[in-house]
Amino acid sequence: MVKITDVARRAGVSPSTVSYALSGKRPISDATRLRVQAAVRELGYHAYGGRGVVGRRSKVLALAVPMRSGVHVPVVTRFAVSVVTAARAHDHDVLLLTQGEGEEDIGRVAATRLADGVIVMDVQLQDPRLPLLRSGALPSVLIGVPAEPDGLTCVDLDFRAAGELCVDHLARLGHRAVALVGSPPEVYVRRTAFAQRLVEGFTAAADRHRIASAVHPCGTGRGAARALAERLVRELPALTGVVVHNEPLLDPLIDAFGQLGLSVPGDLSLTAVCPSSVAAAARVPVTSVAVPSAELGTRAVHLLARKLSGGPVPGATLLPPRLTERASTAPRGA
Image (cartoon, rainbow, N blue to C red; front, side):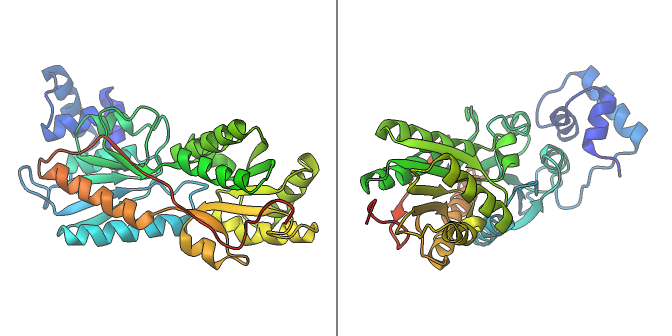
């Protein structure tokens, strides 16, 4: 099947330019429009019409969340459910876009009017989808904040503040050496915004409290948890506080430290940034900063609905983190 990126490559333009040329939403030079039209004819590209006829609403919202390596599907599911629920309240269905980097999917939806707007997840600091989103070809809201959010509507948990809050809590309990067990390495390679900002907050708070710190991305599974626990004990022998931003590792890490003779919270205090239900259900209930997936998904839909109705929307909305103390943290040496 011919894709919008194939047309863009043949015409020597970007997918967003193809979208404009086909939709008429932005002025395009005659020469460019003719090149796009010629590429469409040569390749046999067919834009879906159906409900998305110009001037009519499709009553569909798209949710773009590329299912890339390192994406934790249960978290994505929580967000998706909240988006679907909120969309129904606005009389919209939801189209899930999961392929590739997402730019092609969004370009196709914009060009073919499959959806009235798009909610974008798994946002990177320098996200390749941003030029298309800034173009206005399709109204959008991002769950996540890129490095330069100008011209975009974004909502997210304040992950930098969340990282700081976890370290502040451990420092108040007297801990002087802390480690961050982070997301899988590929999440940092992509410079995913939420993961990078949590590292920034963790490091800033550790420096402010003048305590030793280390940051380690980690894959999933008991083998990865055991290997990292051994490394932390070896490289940071004074370690007494751990922040986890990788929720599948909570129980494996508690078990791995236990096998090394370190109990939670007797020898190690453990905090996490994850859904509250996951933290509360851990083998030792974990002190945590909640990731409010339901509130974020609902807010994103409401912001997009306001955009579609022509109402004003803020540029970026950051939800303040809230820490709930549970059994996994205690004063150092207690």
